[in-house]
Image (cartoon, rainbow, N blue to C red; front, side, top):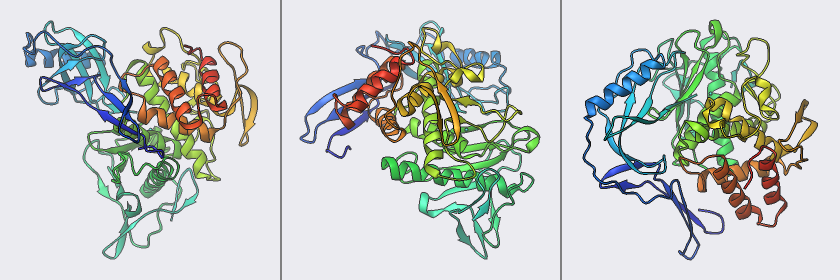
Length: 459
């Protein structure tokens, strides 16, 4: 519900009792109860000739597992029976099966691959990954305050002020909730990776910063907006160089990095992973194609926002992603928002084939848009970091300020994005958001239009 009383209600759709994937919609209602508009993921009428499948569930499951094994997934098995659905995200509604394949991806990340197959022909229609990959002395943020709880004669990392968010220790395991961290004097970590508490301090602190950002800046009470905390698991596996969000456990999980010496628990990684949960609870952007790029970019955008908002002197805000965790081994960040192509794979601008890229690279278009909208084009220094952001058409873009850019993206995400939003639909959604917040004739609205043109997304 907006401050002026406008209500945005998200609907999931069914057809003959079957879930319609890609059929989600948002109804926008005025304070007086009249419908102002409807945002649909697909414009097609939802109807299929029959809900009787020609292909058996067992056949669909075998095909899905075979597809996962082709991606080098280990221990790939169907996670339960395939469910019958209507697949509408492709534009034309089709009776289909949604099979979830478990196991482990080739880099050690858990696998939750959704394979959508035509229930009449067995043909694969789509696939997307359900796992989305992001006082104590911390390794990256100095000495920080932590929300903890008294437990007997000691303390645990449980934050009652933030929905009961807790941080647990997997101790090298790759499943389970993990063991509670306990401490006698409520002073945690040493700042060194060889102390198991240190990674927990960073993860717990990052979760608190992210909760506070969404609460204080956007009025959102927790990841799902229901006041309930998620939980964080640290020390996943051994030498695991990644972090991930998993909706099924409503939790974040962090590896300890190369040789277990650089846990992926910096502020921006924590905020990135938690934001996957926010996206799942709002727009539900499918983790594939252009919608997947927008999903990843949303996590990068709010990771930067949380980092700036934290005002931590040991890890000040910037438009770099993962600059503290040194995954590349040479001190360079994972991604650059001012010119994404500097990482060697990300797209600076939109093109017809951008949706074919890995979602971490197609995200570059939206990351670049957000930087241009916030700071503008050309060379400049922000917070001691130098940037030089080009535009696709050589135009000069004037930034509207990061605070306004954040609010526009959040409003678009929560009220106008749907599960299948692509870059051109994102442009329309952010223009609507800018109009709602600042007016259709505002400098902010014009700034959104200019920034999208700067990354080759035009009407």
